Length: 472
View 1 (cartoon, helix red, strand yellow):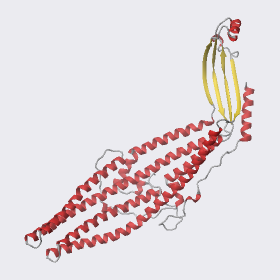
View 2 (view 1 turned 180 degrees about the vertical axis):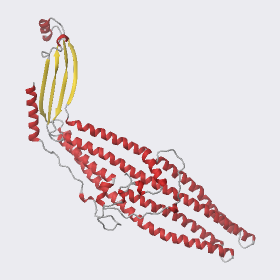
View 3 (view 1 turned 90 degrees about the vertical axis):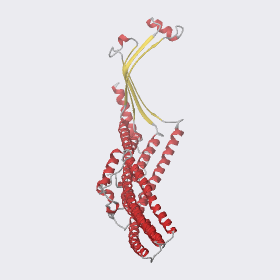
View 4 (view 1 turned 30 degrees about the horizontal axis):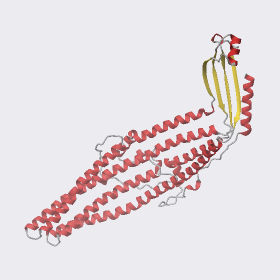
């Protein structure tokens, strides 16, 4: 029996050696998918990037760090992504056993009762003087497929790429969560600042209304002046509950991100105390594939698609399978384990070429080719989106800084205008409408200035995320 097995295995190795080859050629990541430089960035060959900085070092506000820490540890979407990584790891581990023969143990017992008028029944009665025959078997069976066309190898490659891809998906999710938490916190500080502005403006309106009432009592203005002043005061008062509502909603959004039930969020600093960073280290576009998880995930998706092409192409070719079975067999239980008389064994090997299902296999192969072409296009699209997001963030950082400069000057001018308007109004040298208009303009400009500051802080966060920062 050993000689027969040796011959079969030798035959398999010989066939594998003679015809083993790579049946499909992988498509590499397109090198022309990346531009030389980002738009709105100075031409540079410096590969350093703020994306290399860990988020705990990029964000310096302790409140943000505390919120992000909670989000990374407790966010449910991140925990789901962690489970997906675990599942992918199991699949990859399982794929490693593709080359290992399948071995099964078996124990069988059967009884047969042929007809007395049948040929088997007549012979059975003459041979052993019985009308039924029993059969008892115990042993092991082995099945092994030679990886001639690299099918099993591609299965392992695809499973490994899928495992790595699941990790990149989690990283990409974390970068978004880190960015969303920081955006939410900056938005909260802006709403706090706007609430203070609204309250201050309400006090200013109260003072103006009191002055107008005194002038009305003196017969210097009409009731229209009082009514318009009261209306403007109510406009400022209306902002307060609206801003308080938005603050509560923003706190609830942060609660969901950090995996907790809705509650208030601690703020130990004010918006005006935060410094806007001017980050210049952005690296080169081609580095996005190593720093930005969604681009890396798209690259790994192409590797999975390459592996699937190899698997479906291999299905079109003959498969070399070797099967073996051995153990003990007897038609009497008393002789079941009578060795060596009860020993049996079979070994078989052969090439199997699909015929009737060849059309189905060919269709699967064509689908795999189309899926690979989609993967290439998806990679190009992911690069386009990434490069565009970096460019968007760069132009925002630059232009928001210019807008803030003009708006600060505008607010300073309006603050001085209000002082002058109030002084002139008290002395009867200005109309009440001039005072009310100056106050309305200042309120709007101060609210815009707070929003510009928030946009600047958010633009820096967007640049950090767009470059691939936040997952380390």
